[in-house]
Image (cartoon, rainbow, N blue to C red; front, top):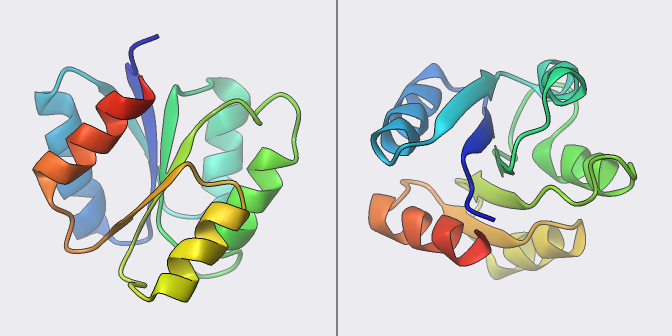
Length: 121
């Protein structure tokens, strides 16, 4: 199944704009959330085919939110790609252990991200 609807979760408006623009240019419908609460409300109203998840956010961080989504049966099938400035190998391993399908560090390489999204689709 091709990925068409993407939820981008990031507290940075700049990052939200960059990722939204990139995904829309590649034919995807994009919704954004600036934190965990907004992301969960968005999930409840319309399930995306993919979630791009920042890690460093106020309140619940991306690792915690990824774990929470993966433990919720109605959302567990939605793949999550961590999209973060946390670039240590331990962060990547931890993100994958929380249930993320892949991990991309910022600044995001557009071609690399699109390749990872296509690999999931």
